[in-house]
Length: 114
Picture 1 (spheres, rainbow, N blue to C red):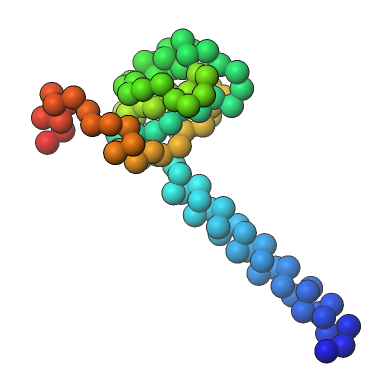
Picture 2 (picture 1 turned 135 degrees about the vertical axis):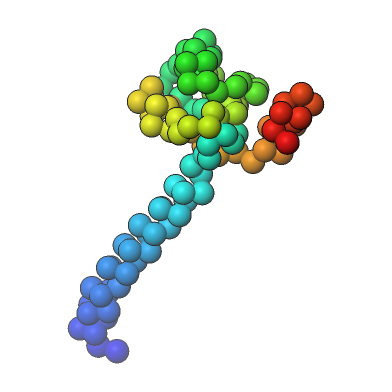
């Protein structure tokens, strides 16, 4: 194979590789975005106190489940409306978390959901 052919192949591969990167990023973002009424990890981007996170969760109607792995982070049960934009405006990210990792809700909560 000539050097000229190699340059042509590299030139044409840049477009499909970039497209695959965008698709992979989009799929990852969709997989990690929390659903309404589901569980999520509230992860502050900057330094934030636990009191600030608790105040934000109460203002949005989210229930606190447990403290998260980092300072100011909490596992939340989200309300039935989308709060991802509100979390981003407050300087935090919401990541979907499987229900079984957060523990089971109290029996009275399970009865209300059924």
